[in-house]
Length: 511
Ligand code: MLC
Ligand code: AMP
Image (cartoon, rainbow, N blue to C red; front, top):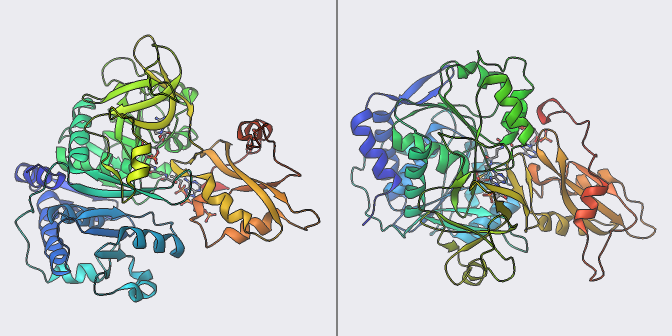
């Protein structure tokens, strides 16, 4: 039997009872006690809907406190929480539901009409809105609280998060209770997170960063979350006067730096700024420190591994570095082909082992095996080196991946769809430096000889098939793609050729 995030939250509620857990501008706060009661009602609803231990609960809803409580309720009844990006289209949802075979799918009230037909003897479909509305909340209002929690083992699955693959299908990363609990407790200690903290939460809650780092830490430590539906520069700066911690992707910091309001005074109440999910430019780290007096604490993580490394809370937070492995995490720089550890200072594959590392990919034993070394190290697909002082630097990626505003996009998935567009001979999707997103998804497309193809046609053909953030921000038509002697497309060369494509681009929201 093992402790779960739900158990730790329920335990914390005994001490923090009437303290606010969620605060939202213009809305009444929700305290820990009320949150626990609502969770217990939702847990009863899950049981009534037939969710038994090990069953998946797939959820594609807008950000709300109730969505977090649904996650907790799922853990309470021993279910496996499966959050889905709100940007996913119908075709993408079909795949996830087919692959994960959930017992319950919870969608937005406005999309339920399109989803009810999915309901069957083995799949219940319910809805959850942002105003305590939806069929799930209707059921919860009438439900008696369920006070017992199902006992789980540390290696039992707690959640599945889908990550796209370099080839073919998306993979469901199965995270265990051990993964979530050990990582949460490590981070609470590493970042001195306490019940006195007030966390500005502006991240989405369907990914590791927003859910398993930010929410878990607040739920377990007894901190208050200033729960914002999305990132807005002015709103964040307004909240900083009454908050202590911000966790964000680098785009948050890029945008904050563009505001003349960001200075030592507006950030005076804050004690910690955390960045991760994508590389934070060293110059932004330095500029932020010069403007505010705060050194951003950059950390490194991955869906499959939760958080791996962090710059120190006390001690130098080194620009361009992601710090040292968290306690209990074994990290090595290894030869990409053999997995043999390399001498200190050399660049190689970043490999990790520890209680943070996931159980494997959902129903993909061979894929799982191929991503682990025989001695248990997981091959992250990132390339790095450890400097003389023990700081890890991520220097590149061994995987064909674009990270746009903190979201991962796997080129293979986009290329396959572009290649189906009439008039397209072939394509290469790459990430190019973008001043707001870090990297922007960009397609280099070769038309068929004689075809009259326009970039806009390619973009239009992808609409509706792919989540918006995966769609290329620009399509560049080219007569051919550079290849090496083996015939492999030289993406590095394409990235160099087009490196300035977005040099003058404005932030998304203002574009
Ligand atoms: C939104 N859009 C994006 C985008 N976000 N396009 C590319 N990349 C993105 N990241 C699109 C929208 O569909 C819309 O398209 C337009 O851009 C503007 O949308 P918006 O809603 O106004 O954007 P905004 O709210 O400003 O969002 C940008 C953002 C957001 C960076 C704040 O993407 C975000 O919160 N990212 C965080 C992702 C995250 O949590 N990653 C953690 C993964 S966990 P149009 O054309 O309709 O206008 C992980 C492990 C770890 O990686 O280590 O943490
Ligand atoms: P995801 O699959 O969405 O969990 O993304 C994980 C990937 O994000 C990692 O493998 C890294 O490539 C990248 N990443 C996360 N944090 C950082 C960071 N601080 N610096 C550079 N890359 C990062």
